[in-house]
Image (tube, chains in turn yellow, green):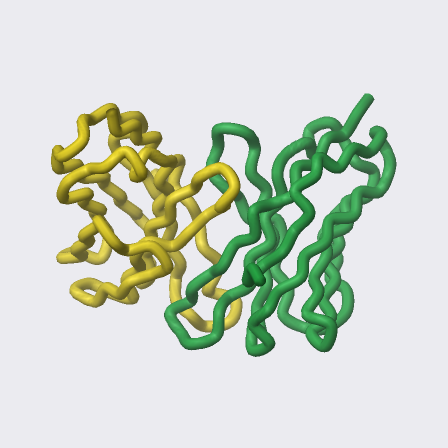
Length: 115
Length: 112
């Protein structure tokens, strides 16, 4: 039971490069989420998706792009990485928005360093 | 005003004591509340969720909710060193989308 996985786990890149972080879940959950976690800010929602081909912005979407062509995958792309995007990125998924099914389960995270 | 407020700590308690973690939130329409535990360098993991006013118990953990006061808390009884972690309070925002809003977390240290 793989659950929810993220790759890569660690990434170092340079300012201006494009970076894609991958997220894969094996539960067939409808909802998927991308968060970033920084000291002093806690977890902040970047983008979320209610189903394949349905995505919406969260609290801090600028500089990021997402897609969801398949239910199980939700990649996050930094089109032109900036130092301010150095962070730990977590992907999460939930079954639905119905009470009792809205618990979000988190992947192991990707530590991204932008030089 | 932040949407979710938590005392950042660290909150230090001796082993075997009760740890009390508090959280206030600003979205009056929030109906679902989650507590996550996060060990250093790890991802958040669910501890409990609560929907109704009052107390909800699960083993050594008790969540308390008071919607009128916009207050939710987590009690940990018989605290163990393995409970040392950061505890994140997360209400679901109104407006749909199952969006959680997280507090910055309270760091708990359980001392031997």
